[in-house]
Length: 495
Image (cartoon, rainbow, N blue to C red):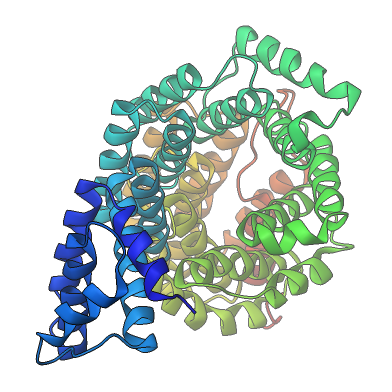
């Protein structure tokens, strides 16, 4: 317990600006005991040397504080220490910025994006002014991630990347890889082609990892960034098998470090989600259900985290049902998806919303509910984005089939003509599309007696078409082939 002598020494150690702040801090309190603390502080401040008898004489002149007690001394000491903590917090720019970063984390959890953007801009200005580069890097890191997950201008992201690169020290190994990661993520987001210079920089940076040295204790993070960026590179050049292997290696790396799973839970969830997507792309579903369940069983820490689970787990579950022709189970999932899109709308980007809408459209198409299918076709077409051109192409083809199935004959010819023109204008008019449109037209113009023959010709084309062009997309072949079989055999239950 603090003695009155120690309290005196503490008061006398205060510098002028500290004493002024402590006095103001303690005067803000309104209770009688706190006012006594102010009196005791003033007496100890004015006492030139410690003299207990002189102090007692002065205390006796105060009606509310006749003498000092152990509790009054303890309360005074605690009040001074609390005031000093507040003083240091307000006078320390580093501590102020760290608190602002904490505020940013809170805003992120609660999806308050407008206030968060203003706060990050303010943080960036302060960190730049005081040349606090560690804080500045953290702010830039958060800004880049925020821009990448929103509709922000790609030029703005590019500017932040340049600032990030200029701020990061040239010998900062982790920083260089982080820059590359964001660069490649931006390239992927924009759907751009990798330049040779970017490829060379990528290989040069990753060549440094061959020694497997633990640089500054960041080995875990360095290898994680390496695996992530390498997978993105392979994705951009179309090597799906290598993407799968790198995503699998990344999962193994995290599972070898269970403490990091708990420390960086959101990052671990993203690793699992990327692995599931890669599994789907190569058609390897051996570990898919178990990994999906593992993802679902991870704790949810915030609304933001809850939204992340929705847009990953629920989406992948829907994809799994579609891939395995479990359309009734996919149908039961649709109300959950619609509710989630309303609740987490700000969290889910437009490309994912479009993919959700497209897959729901496919569910109704496969279950021969063409009216609802067209409803969701219209929802997909509402998205004005350059992303997922494949989805937009598929939608126009399936729209033709849905209207044909509903016998909306008045609009079929104009719809076919407009779709054909759109494909030609967007340079998507390949030999496959040309053959498809010719057979659609023959089907539309055929009478009841020639309908089955037209369907057989369409089915023969879908089953036997082989492209001579590498990488050519044959949109909706499986969906259209199943539709032909349903139309020829209407009593047969859709797969």
